[in-house]
Image (tube, rainbow, N blue to C red; front, top):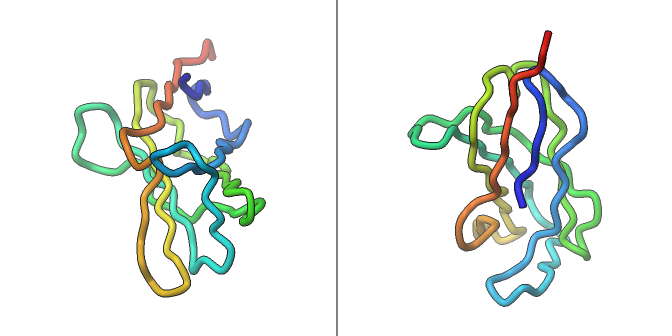
Length: 108
């Protein structure tokens, strides 16, 4: 299922529960940070590369709060979260594929 938002909106936030390839929730307690990456379908340039918020590390819950400019251009985007663990190993979620984000033109 895709996350949908209108152009220039900054709510609702994008929230996910990260899981491994077997569908198990990943405990990210003690991580050194999480980043959210987003780019337009077919583009090689990131539209968003920003810090994400860990809302429940034990249960793998993370979110990204949109800022002005993130949703300025309508289109289909791919997103992922990159976790840096305490020992500096990096893992990207989802492990296979991406989150689909659809930014739809608003009427005003």
